[in-house]
Image (cartoon, rainbow, N blue to C red; front, side):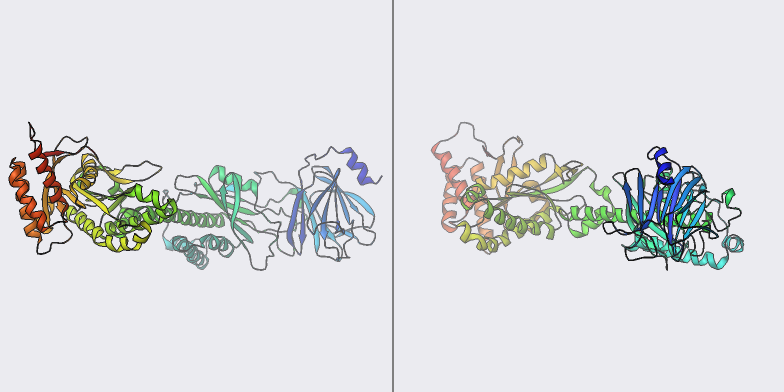
Length: 626
C-alpha cells in the first residue's frame, strides 16, 4: 500500500475536515471543493469528462485538471489527503514533474510530505496552482450595513450631508463619487424605463463598484435563480462560477446587505501573497412589503500575480445596496405595469378606451354605489331554433359575429358592456362615469344596433335560411353599481329592480311586436329628440308595478306622425273601454300600415274585449311570460 492509501483507510468516509481546495489557472480561480477525503488530480483519461470534473472513486475522489492533449500534466499528478483541520499529506505522483510548495520549496517526483495549511502548490511548467486553506467560518469576516435595506418606494430617515461636505470627505474623492453617482443614476433611469435593467444592474456592479463577477438572482419557489450575469473585462467566465449560497441565504433571511472581507490568518504574516480568496457582497432585492424576492451579488477575485484580494469596502457595499434598490424599483415598476396592463385589458373588455384609462388611474370609480343608469338588454330572436338547425360550430361563429357588432355599438356610444348571457347582451350607461344624458346614449346605441342589423343579416341569411332579428329593451332608473362578480372573476355592472325591469321589457318586445321598446322612465329622459309612441301599459312577470311601454323608431319618415297619432288615439279609446272606436281606428290604420306589429296586437286585444267583455277591465296588460 502507498502511504496515501494507508492514510485513507484510517479515515472515516466523508469526515468534515473543513479544508477548501481551490484550483487557479493564470491566477483565476476556476474550481473549488471541500477536501474531506483523499483526492487525486491529473490529466483527463479517455473515458473521463473534460476539466474541471470531480469524480467519485470508492473511498477517494479524482479531479480532472487538464485536457487529454496537455502532456505537461501527468494522468496521476498529485494526491492530497486530509490529516486534520489544518494539515494535509501531499504526494507528487508524477515521475517527471516537480511540484513547488509556496513557490519556493520543491517536492520531488514520486515523493510526499505533510504540510500545515494554508499552502500554495504550483505545478512546474504550467499555469495551474492549487491553494489549500482552512474553510473559513461562515460568519468570519462577514459584515453588514447598519441600516436595513430600504423597501421600494419608501425612505428611511438618515442624516444628510451637503454635497460640499461629501466632496471634501477623505473617504470619497470627489471625482470618483461624481462618477459613481452618474453611473448609478443611469441604472435607476434604466430601472424606470428599460426592460433590460437587470443586465444593466449586473454590469454596474462591475463598472461602478469594480468587482470581477456580478449577478442578479431571483428567489422563486424556494430556490435561487440566475436572472442576469456579468463578468469584468479580461476576466474569463468559468462554467463553474456561482455565487456564495451561504451569503445569499444570510442576505435573504436578514433582508440587509452583507459583504465578506478577506481575513489574514496568523500563519500568513510571513507569506503576504496568501490570503483568503473570499471577497464578495450581496444585497437583498425587496418587494413592496419587505419580502426578499432576489439579490444583487458581486465578487472580487485575486489578481493574476498572487492570491491577494482587494477587500470590499463599506462604501462599495453601500453602492451595491443602492443598485439593488434600483432593481427593486424596476421590479416594482414592472409589477405595476403588468397590473396596469391586466387592468387595462380587463377594463377595455367592458369600457371605452378613454374610460379605461380613467379607471386605470382612479380605480375608486369602480366602488359600489347607487346611481341613476340606463340599462339595455338585446336578445337574438329564435336563437334556440336556429342553433339546433345549424349546429354548434356554426352557431359559435354566428353569435360571435352578432355580439361583436352589438358590442361595437355599445362602445361607440360610450356604454359599458356588462355581460353576455347566452344569446343576450347587457349594457349600461351612467356609471362608472357620471353622464347626465345616459338615456340618450343608450337609445342611440340601440338604434345603431338596428341600423347595422340588415348588413349582418345578409351575411348569414344563406346559412340560417332566414333573417337575424333582435329584441331590445331599455329602462332608466336607480341601481346599485359595482363589481357584481367576485374577487376571482370581475364583472362590473348594475343590480336592482331597474335591471330586472329592463330584462322584462326586452322580453315584452315579442308581445307588442316592436323590435325596440323603452320604458316610460327612459322616454321621459330622452324627451322629443327621438321618435317614440306610447304602446301600452303592462305588468311584467314578478314585478307588480305597471310600466308604460314606448316604441323607439330608428328613423321617422313622413308617415310617422300620422301612424303615431292614430295609434295613440286608438290606445286611448281602448283604455277608456271604447272598444268599438278602438277597433274601428285600428282597422283603418292597419289598412294604411299593414306591417305595423303594435297595431295588429292592439286590434286583436280590442276585438277580444268585444267578443268576451270582461267583468273587471284593466287597461294594464298582464304578461304571463318573460
